Length: 292
Image 1 (spheres, rainbow, N blue to C red):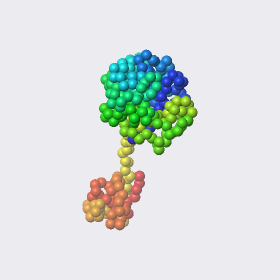
Image 2 (image 1 turned 135 degrees about the vertical axis):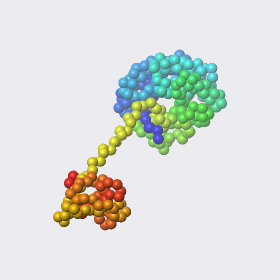
Image 3 (image 1 turned 90 degrees about the vertical axis):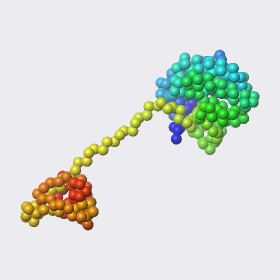
Image 4 (image 1 turned 60 degrees about the vertical axis):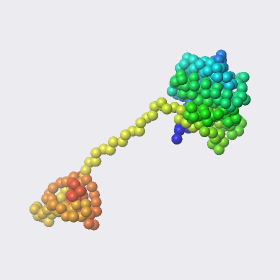
């Protein structure tokens, strides 16, 4: 199962400090970098630095204004990529296309033309060796985009907004999850923990380069055997004790007044026996004493 990470997405409307988001539990941040072909988020650089200082993983997003225009989509993608490079967004992270109504972006064209333009944008980003994804509201994606075609081409790459209710939400209620194929992130609130920031939860592992502490290999210590002593029996130093195998068959004899390493204990023919060698070398415990 993918890690369920809390993610915030920030723009000029949010603080330049990511500390409060980190304290609330956010592990990743998606910073708005650009819009159209002329707008830069003036806070982006500081927001990125703060995110890194708070040990958060940083992605970037671009707000689209190209509608269904393929040529404008490509131009906006190049503008976005150039800014991402200047801000040192790692190519191990995602660059997201925010394609929704607003700032002149028209979504009510045909599904076919919308999807072609979105794919054109995403192709340019992918060709620059970045991971790429698509953001919008659940309704817009269902009504105006062929998400199946996008997911088929780019994999699990959708970042979907869908809120159970308006106002503050601290934790996602998966009863209201927007059931769609290809969802990588779910934006479940626009006021996470009362911090005035969008709250998101990952459904796909977005960070694949995180340092993973390997499980500590447990090396079993060599077992130190016990020592048994076979005393002189019945006052006769020539008396010997007969061994058994693990099935209870009698084997050779061993002398008394000797010491042996004990490697196992077993009941054989109703007798407690100590293993002092191979599986054919079990001595009845009644003839011995454990001395170590």
